[in-house]
Length: 404
Picture (cartoon, rainbow, N blue to C red):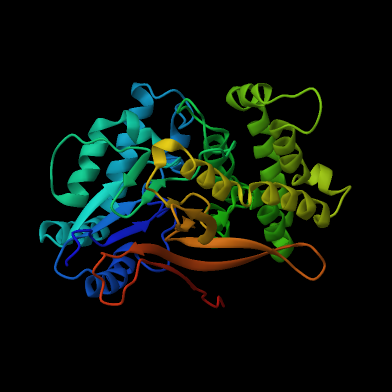
């Protein structure tokens, strides 16, 4: 008996930008490589491709710095006008990528789903931008909504971006986050500030946008100065100034007040400590190892949280019949067993990213170390009549280039 369940694919965190450095492998070429495998597996029916959030990066655009509006401000007319400009820039820059997708949709080989993440959440208030994106992806010009979660009952899948419960990158009311402020005020400004100070260009400065997780950015800044000794003073001076400005931002100060607890190390205090440890003033009295220990504290608190949230979701009565949860957000792919649901294995998946990642590690002295690589991850759920009897396949790959 044939199953009408389609081939269902999840990818996430492609983070298309209007101006920041592009990856070594153009997104259009990456899609063509990806499509070879999908075409071989889909059979005669259309495949369904779900973008699991952050297809567009509306936060880390230098265009915000040329005006008074910021992505963490309330989504009034000025903010939405800026969103429209960024979307237009991305659609033009990545025209080949959208053409490759749209060609498969128009030929009947593919259909598209779009979930919102934390970096493209402002699309919720930008109907014109959503309409343009949908036309670029599908060729269809119509008003469309992009939800925050989707359920695929035939596959038993619940999908949402995964920033739920991430105090840095989620606001329960859908508002701006401290992660937005970090993205534009620290990460996006840093390369510009250093270049203005030294009067010349270093391509490595742009790599700050690829550092994941976001908690590792201060360690990366410090590490850059250690590797490039001529950059040590300029990077420390620039970073210290940016941190001081950041901590003085009214939005940031209000966020920290909202997280304040009289006893214990609340999230605001943790963030302030992490940032201040990375500045020159405090680093003169400590060691890189202290920053590394604090980073480990942050990361261990984050590890496993997304899978625990997924398990809680599957236990809810309204999730009956589902046994898979698919997230993005962290940029690190994973597959975690969640026990049995209805007598069958339940699993949490993270679909990683399709971009360059600078992943933190630790050298033999305990200091932060980073490995850059180009990542490409995806998750495929197969039709019930798959010739090999597959339920799903989880693919994760990394390409490492040797820099001269």
